[in-house]
Image (tube, rainbow, N blue to C red):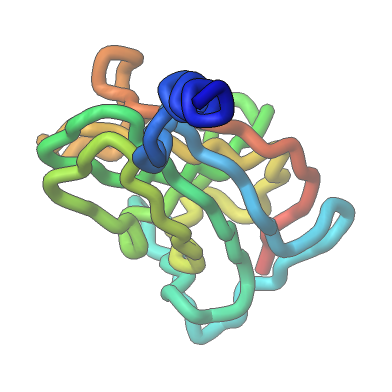
Length: 168
């Protein structure tokens, strides 16, 4: 009888199997970035430079690659990933390129949503460009603007320090 009571007391103190935990924070995490710091990316002549607009580096070109893990801790009806090539060069607004030709979108993100994505397509506005970092922003702005989203539109963001040059 004492043994039965002890087992019953032990069982009452245990919780039932838990459901998978939902992340408490949305996040953008850099997995890999290429090229490495100190590199020079040479844009081949078959990728023409247009004024205005710059040069389009097509997805899959092998010139630049940003591999990311994305997580949403909240319900989000629509999301997009913008990746900016940061620079300290004057007159460029803090970035010299971004990924409008390789900017994935998702719908109906639920708490705990996660994915991995690799961005390889970019538009570079000026050559040469000294890239000082990469900023990735998962956001919920859906108006076609390419400028960085404001904080109230941003789900999560991260910046990866890097130093490479893009030139002809």
